[in-house]
Image (tube, rainbow, N blue to C red; front, side):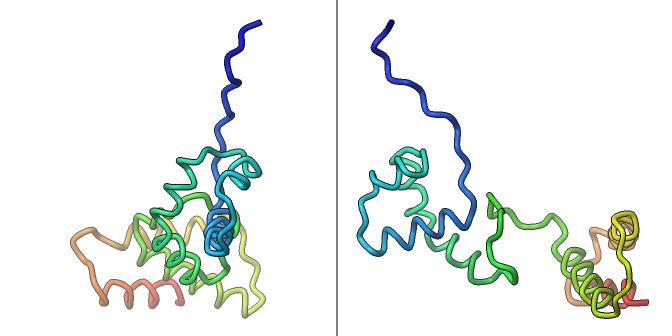
Length: 133
């Protein structure tokens, strides 16, 4: 048998776990103690510290909290996502049934009606009008 150290399995932390790590770092807990607890390396802890502003901003601006998300990536078409989310909330308030195909159809139609050369506040207003009719 060789005396090589066993390689650690790849671990992707959720945004919530990263936020918890930042909170623990602020309480001056040892990085090495929770690095082994989460099964991550010390350089991962340093990367989380380096990105603390992005992580905290993301957590503070999400409506439902970080949930099970792993990345901070933004939507490719944020205006479509925002309008579709508002439509979803309105439909839910009306107790309307929302199926996956219905949601996908609305998203596809909204994206189709949104051209890349039409951007800005007018585009968002158009999407809201389109989805709520």
